[in-house]
View (cartoon, rainbow, N blue to C red):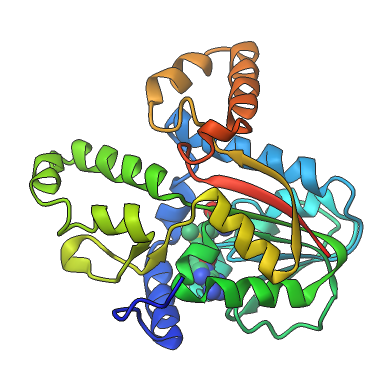
Length: 292
Ligand SMILES: C[S@@+](CC[C@H](N)C(=O)[O-])C[C@H]1O[C@@H](n2cnc3c(N)ncnc32)[C@H](O)[C@@H]1O
């Protein structure tokens, strides 16, 4: 994909992300708590992580831990060491505090920095995890970020990432717009609000007055697979996150009333999420891949 002419420079994009995430520490934490559908999105990501990290014994790198939502799962998975790199100091501080509250022998090193330029030795990690659409937030520099991940990953090492697809992002945008009674405004001028551009080009420029609060590159599943292949990875597993229930809280709320029905919903979602026809309709999709 060519770099769009209205894309930011990498340095400006990262400065914008740093400011934005410094202000959003609590809302990033809330993203996966409260409403049952949010808990479902989180639990499905955690289970996917556990599935693919269960044989990791050495060092694990987490890119963009934010407030540390998934860091405990990484610590559980390894007996080695976790290194966490984030642009946002406020997020790192929050993650460090939360992680410090749990007793766990696995140490975590916190580094303020950019995933595109890691101050880390080549081939020094057994696994790299980048959840929270880190590759998408890199806009046109997603391929460079994946090459940097490949540089620090050992041969046969595992990576787990998530991506946001054009269709699921449009679903989510419309859901949020309905909740704020703004959908008619969007549907009167979908082009103005980048709906066409997201669906056709997979790109949203940074234009806050048009609700493009940050630059973002959306990926279809074949695009994500191709980007990983080019960076030197072999895809092992891909799963849409909650294709059945992603945007409907009532189903998740009903299932959450008992452990048995909740587990059953998780399994249904995991089976449905691996069917090729559903891959771009959930709350993003997760990919596990292995370094060549
Ligand atoms: C959407 S939050 C995700 C947090 C957490 N991983 C999760 O999924 O809940 C994205 C985090 O990644 C960080 N981030 C985004 N792009 C980054 C980059 N290129 N390098 C390092 N950190 C980045 C942000 O500062 C923010 O804390």
